[in-house]
Image 1 (cartoon, rainbow, N blue to C red):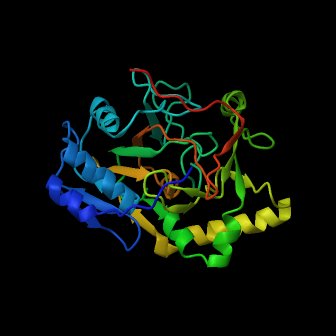
Image 2 (tube, one colour; image 1 turned 120 degrees about the horizontal axis):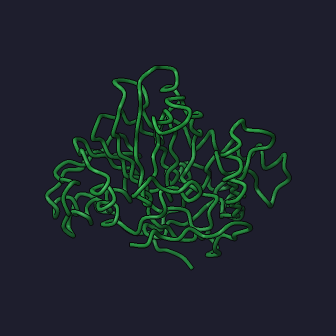
Length: 318
């Protein structure tokens, strides 16, 4: 099984749809103008957005004050939604949607207590056998400053490695885990839910993108815990080197949110960094995310990932 590399002609797709795609950096990120995500899009507009996602890995929209219903409807134009969060589920009445909040809300017994800081660099739910393909994040309550999110292009990171390193990595796998932390995390409810939904998968360390055919350095620091073909010490040193390489500034972009901003990224070829600085200030921050069904990754040798524990992701039924 393999995917041929394709020519991603963003300009032609954008021209056909009458939209404008403005790149943010050499490798990563673009802002799209000329569409209204609160309304159904036509086929050429969807094609232009998908093409821009493949080329720039993450695209952004400004001034899109979508409702939950509009957010989900936009997601369905790009693919089939997963549950809001594979482990923690969705929000009341909207099983496709996941709340990313800074505070526990008023209906919680703990009132507006800040939630635990979010994870570091990661791609969404890579411990699953079939991780999500696309994530769509909407800024609802946005602080006046702070809370920026960063993305990195994992295809560009792979291409920047030496041919010798590429050939070595092409033969390896990564063990991605979503399981309770060692020891007590201080959140018994979290540990209990995760223990009932543990996921462990061996993914190729270099996956072939199913649409573009690009080779992608498939490292998700928050989930990647080992390299089965190497000793623990060898694997640790290699993983740290790859994480440092994959997040070099030249592969990244940083996005400053505004109310009504929307980010759409290719979860198969990016990692992103959720902000921790927002926990240092008193501002509220409430975002919502919809993720779309993905496929089982396969490596340069054409072999698919191997699930060791946990169920595959299934779409939300309409």
